[in-house]
Amino acid sequence: MHANGDKKRKTVAVLFGGRSVEHEISIITGLQLIKAMDTVKYRPIPVYISPQGKWYSGDALLEKSFYRRMPASLSSVHEVTILPEPNIKGLTIRRPKTSDKAPYSMLNRASESVIHVDIFLPAFHGTYGEDGCIQGLLELADVPYTGCNVLASALGMSKYHAKKLVESHGIPVLPGVVVKRESIEADYGNHLDFLREQVLQHPGLESFPLFIKPLNLGSSIGVAKVRNIEEFNSAIVLALKYDVGAIVEPCLDDKMELNVSVIDDGEPKASVVEIPVSSSGDELTYEDKYLRGGSKKGDNTLAGMASLTRVIDPPDLPEELKTQAREYAVKAFKVLNCSGVSRIDFMLDKRTNVLYFNEINTIPGSFSFYLWMNCKPPHFYTEVITTILDRAEDTYARKTALAREIGFKALFK
View (cartoon, rainbow, N blue to C red):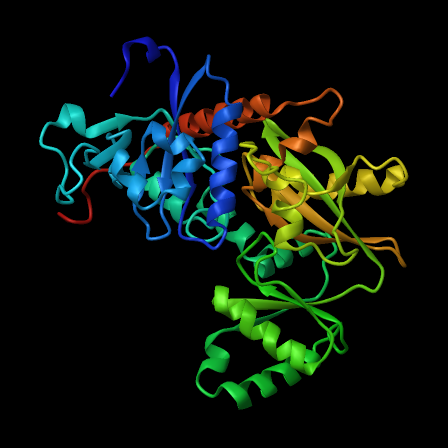
């Protein structure tokens, strides 16, 4: 489907929502992106994936009120999907919006069954969107898409594997132990006690307080600081409620969080440094990240990660620490083979001045635009989006130049 006036613009499908506990944050990121996109060069179309895994597209998705009226509002948009087949180059319509009770089948007329898409822009956070799943589907469909590939997405999502890989390249990390859900399922009480004893014997984890968080989630969901055995047990259960694994890490007595964004602009480059500030003076919570300083009642703005209280390019932070954070961030981005835009989070031990890699967000909340707009010169949100879309097309062009077939040889030997 091409509107006559849109032939010169490239159609960008912005994918958001998804089967993740970070579902609503992804909606905010997706709608922000669409509002900030250069509409002279691009024609953005929203693609919403429900928590049940159904895909929808239509202009009604652009309004925040649409999501308050679900599921009734879903009848006003197309149900669509991406088929894992090359040469379709778009979204296949499963059900036209005018037929609410139509069966789940493709339309009969091929010319009307596909919404053409030039570039796909995933704006997911968490599982089934930021972890390589969607990226694998887009690879099978053989279409250009922004951000990290399958491997980089999967590595970035696993806090443990990302830490181990960057550590092997000389970037300091804090120790960590992975606890798997199946390790306590069979005999909860006894297994949890045994598991806790094993964790507390690991170097660097011998004493409280400790941090426990889901292995593959973000947005501070399921994260807990534990000070004793009882809190340890309940925090493990909480983390494993949301994920198949949890990671246990030490809690620094006197620490500061530093974040840096990195963008792939031909060569990765780092943004300014930020210090996020929690409301309690302790660890950042979901509420800190997304509900502070946000919209007032009746305001239709979408604040997202931009609502978090933060000190950007802090003047009292030593320049050598800023430089080290930016250098580590670029190095981690390269080591994990990332693309698009990411945010790398560090922990600074203020007693020793050692900077530790904490985690990477390969699709950061609000795409970290607030860090780029404070660079010198500023790199505005619209420019960030254009940069990652350009890189997606470059990456796709390089891949399509590769040889894919050698013909049938062994089969007919």
